[in-house]
Image (tube, rainbow, N blue to C red; front, side, top):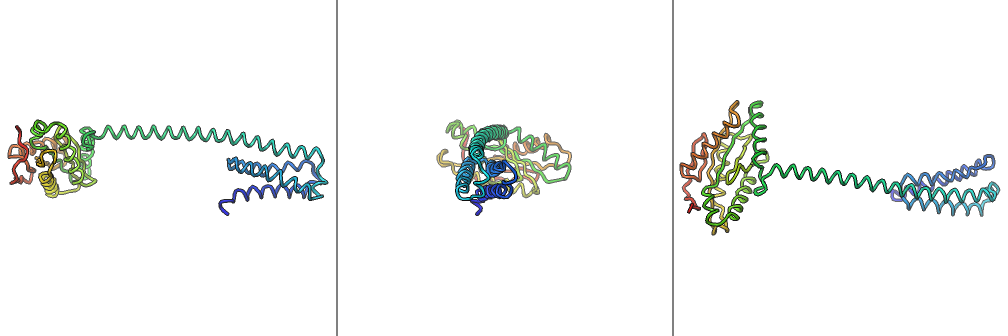
Length: 304
């Protein structure tokens, strides 16, 4: 019933028109104009199929009733018959023209909406592209600075935990020199994937530049963040790269804890200072205000 409800409604419009003609046709001339009712109803559906249906229904049924019902035949003369036929056909032609124009407007609107959507998608894609580093798909330096400003402000306002970690791949120049820059790019990409898979959705990972990365760790104590960084260091040290003759790489990490009013520049300087301390102490370790944990594993890639 739901599928054919509109056809039923159009037919009811036709029946209503016939009732008007039978009830008042003897007293009021020109009531055949009520046959326009089902045609008007069909136009609301903006469907050529329904308009053709009501034209055939109205003409066919009207002539059938005219042939079979004396009451209706007595009300209609030759001129009325011509007028009814012309009115139905003319209304149908006008209706088809309206539907054609309506379809053109609809298509024009769809094209405009599609163009708006495409422009919006392009805008979003451009905006996203400007936020990410094209090689590692991590946030770039500019986006990292935006997050750092926002998170330090959030810490100052609500005293929320925040740590900044600076990470540097050990002996990266030796990797490029021995295996080529394309292998160095693979190492950067795999390291970035490891970082993204290790942190939570509330943390931020970014490529600071070259072989150096930064992590903004939120909602954790300094001990928890230090342990997380140790896990990252250990995971990378145990990852074998086929491109490096099945060897591994290591990473040095410095982490600073943010305190209220410290400022983002000072925070980074502290993390960077801890990173250089890790480098001077032998690399492949995490250094933070909690101290450092020296790895017993030897460095795998050495500079030539």
